[in-house]
Amino acid sequence: MSAPSPLTALSQTIHHCQLCPLSRLRTHAVPGEGVTDAEIVFIGEAPGYHEDRQGRPFVGQSGKLLDKLLAQINLTRAQVYITNIIKCRPPNNRDPLPAEITACTPFLHQQISLLSPLLIVTLGRYSMGHFFPPTATITHVHGQPLMLDDVVVLPMFHPAAALRNPQWMQAMQADFDKIPDILVPLRQQRQAQNQPGPDDMHQLSLF
Ligand code: URA
Image (cartoon, rainbow, N blue to C red; front, side, top):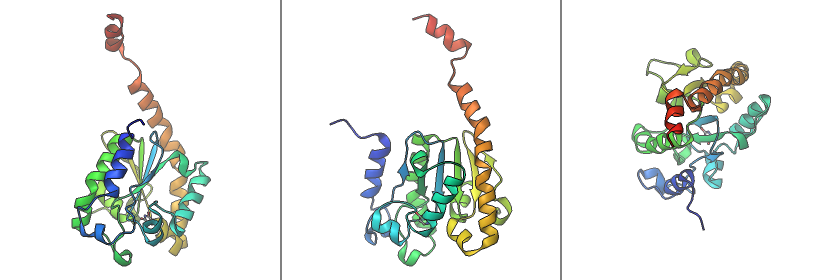
């Protein structure tokens, strides 16, 4: 049998993680799921009741909305990667604690580094807060791409918030519609980076 891919090996590590007390309360850890060559990584907050039961991200009402929003831009979850800031369900879906985020985010960093996506879409304030300065509020920055060194981060409302508030639902739909246009130059840039430059050609011709 061949060795698991690095991403699969990481998911297995997350399944057995005991770095914080949430590990003792979970049914399943929820590492995330999707394709290894995903251009887009979606990052939510934390697994809820259904996610904890099934070990899969965004399978409840929020997930149904996420699927609908993906379909709006002709994507399915089979073409992206979906994960959360923390990988185990907090009791009664309370907000993640700073210590839980600190314990868990090295997993997120490894996932991002293995996936190397063009675009990260943050869903809700916890994942936004991971990339944006503490002064940023989601009502002000949603839909505005932030260019980081090797990835662009697009903050959005959390689907659960959009389900509660029609105005945020509209904003979320409009923010999703921006994704295809944001991806075009990022794909071109990645393609140019992956093309051999004159120095590489010289090196190649030596062999
Ligand atoms: N909400 C989240 O933030 N993540 C999930 O996986 C499900 C609901």
